[in-house]
Image 1 (cartoon, helix red, strand yellow):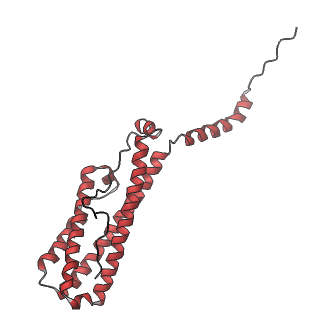
Image 2 (tube, one colour; image 1 turned 180 degrees about the vertical axis):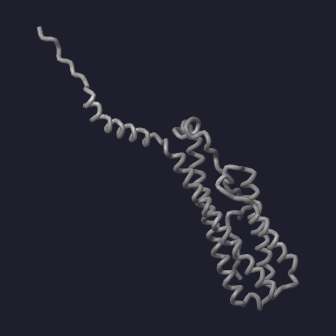
Length: 208
């Protein structure tokens, strides 16, 4: 009686199949969300860079704005000095990628920028008392640039908040929470901006 035929995988056949196994394994891994955390992390950090760039753009406008106002309203010394000091405090705070995962550092950054926004609001408010200043072409150009920058800041903050929401949600929900507790244990939740006032998420009005 003839014994049943047995089929064995030879070494050459396994070698031919191995690329297929590797491809299938890669597809299985990519489909289980293992890459989501670092992907969302990079996206959120990119949005954070946009926020920094827009705040820096605003800081760069302030010296010329202060000098222009000073030419027409030297007596507004306290207001002018307040803007200069607020700008100095905002720009002296060390800000990098680690800031978004450090609650204390993020809080200091947000507080400094809020203080600068308030000082700028007071500076622009006093210009109402100086018609010549309000009609000065240099002032009007700076006012327009500042208005545009404040709008860009609002957009950048909004995009960052959404990117952080996606990233933090991935850390807390399945299957992301599994990867966060194993493969990506060094990844921490990111901080986001808080609304300390009903209109805190709106750019200050700089129209005259």
